[in-house]
Image (cartoon, rainbow, N blue to C red):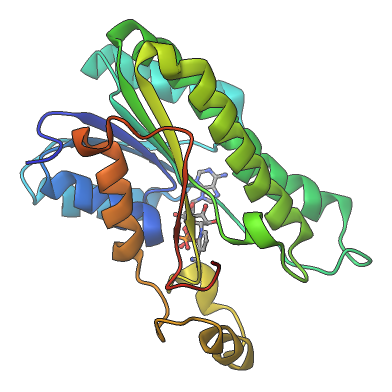
Amino acid sequence: MLLKDRLALITGGSRGIGREIALAFAREGANLAVCDISPEGLENVRKEIEALGVKCEIYEADVQKKEQVDQTVQKILDTQGRIDILVNNAGVTKDNLIARMSESEWDLVLSINLKGTFLFTKAVCRSMIREGRGKIVNIASVIGLVGNLGQANYSASKAGVIALTKSAAREFARKNICVNAIAPGFIETQMTQALQEEMKQKALGGIPLGRFGKASDIAETALFLASDKADYITGQVIVVDGGMVM
Ligand SMILES: NC(=O)c1ccc[n+]([C@@H]2O[C@H](COP(=O)([O-])OP(=O)(O)OC[C@H]3O[C@@H](n4cnc5c(N)ncnc54)[C@H](O)[C@@H]3O)[C@@H](O)[C@H]2O)c1
């Protein structure tokens, strides 16, 4: 088993990509701490994870709120003693053209996607430094690499996540903590379900592998980066997009 007895904390883990990562880690023997703003989603994912024979603690917390982030991490450390793996996955979109984008649409997306990643990284790093090892996997996006019409806030937040990943990788390398990002392309989750059919078909035309991604495609990459198999990889952005961006 790739993650036997490791403690992995996943943000935004009650559905979509985060849930799939949590389940993939559980199948490989990790115990889970899952944080999200959806209490029902958290209860459901806890049942699914526990059915796989590992432990799962759930935490209702908003990644933008420092106090909630710090309390979540402290509670995990009090009960589990350490956090081996952090996956910063929680993220949202609030699409609009720049001319129409409100300040609150900008602030919300930057706050959840980028500040949330910073807050959890900051809260967890002390424990990893003490342990002399750790794996941090940040979920960015190909949109953070190439930009997108109507997604100035989202693309800026994900470009920020990529830059944060590289800075953190440099800061923590001497402490044996690896920090990498995954840049998914178009993945079928509730986030992309809302898009119009016409937009989806257009996007599909730009994917050389000829299909949208599945949450499990991202989970498999996260599993690799969180495991000992990736011990010599840090500061990288792994694009998982069926060839959309190359
Ligand atoms: N689906 C895609 O095509 C795609 C592509 C590239 C990147 N991503 C990224 O992957 C990640 C997961 O996306 P998804 O498609 O699974 O989306 P999703 O909307 O299905 O899931 C997002 C999860 O994050 C949680 N969340 C939202 N705001 C939160 C907050 N403030 N605090 C804590 N939890 C919060 C939600 O409750 C939900 O469980 C996001 O960071 C997203 O930007 C997704």
